[in-house]
Length: 232
Image (cartoon, rainbow, N blue to C red):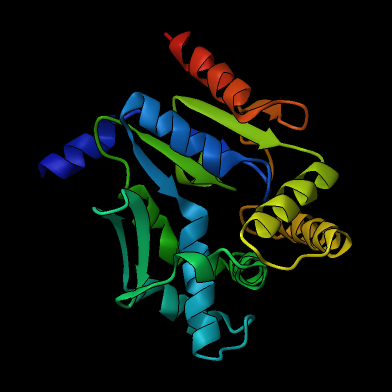
């Protein structure tokens, strides 16, 4: 048995699931940095599949073709040594900003509902579980991908608050945005994610629910770290 396999069997995991805009990505990165653990942004994998499908002009309900894209996805996660920022490459091209667009996010929600796509990405996600530990951010990390996680969090916020956060992010980047449209898109994505037949967006068994609507990022991070410190 390889050292990687042994490490993957014992590495602790904290899962942070929740809907778009709940703050799970920012919170997960901060917790991983604090603990010195690895970080998995599972949503980025689905966005990359969606972006690859869009670039190939595939229909987003074509399960067989999109699952093939997922299996053959040429993805790299790097850190830019000059800026110290993470870089995401798809087929050798930096696509970090492209996958964060609203169009790509909505497309990702659609391809993530395809069972064959989820199956194709499952092993790839589990490969991130190595020592000293992993913080995994997504929608089914605690329920499907890492059901034996040491600590499971379901981070939520009201649709209105999440739309406000997204609106602020887009405006700060100099991008045009309509708050009402963002709210409707978030509600539609929530309904799609929660009602899909495979791995719906629901709190995992044993997950701790945290509502971040009225909490700062620092408060949420401190609360989760405190909960992890209290584990036996």
